[in-house]
Amino acid sequence: MYRSGIKVALASAALMIFANAASAQAVITSKQLSVDAANGMAMAALEQCRKDGFRVSVAIVDRAGNVQVLLKDNGAGPHTPDTARRKAYTSASFGVPSAEFAKRVANPGAATLKDITEVIALAGALPIRAGKDLLGGIGVGGAPAGEKDEACANAGLQKFASQLK
Image (cartoon, rainbow, N blue to C red):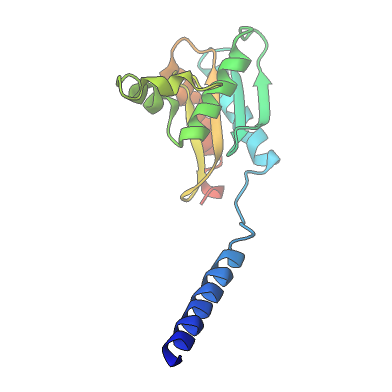
């Protein structure tokens, strides 16, 4: 009888510990990129591409892939807003530059990842992080090559790098 009482007490204590641990995680706090910072990043990327002679679109998405900012420069092609958004979405979804994602899906074992809706395997986007926290992605579409798009995206990130620590 004494042993069963101890077992019940231990089981109850364990249940309370797990219940407290579960309730402690009922609310999660996460960092978000402000709309002002997102707009500033997008404009900095657009300005860099203009300096380089390219007319592009720039998209900033949050960590869930929702568009925060989408800019289409005068003279940018009609496909560039969608391409920029999908590049940013891909980078935010996988937490890596979209060029890295494109390299990953070149491997036959990972090739089906490129078939996920809204994902695109093209260079031109970078994840936006505050320390180790993923905030979203910045994508650029319309320069003559993905590495040129990525350079503009990087210019946007660098403008706010000191604020993203």
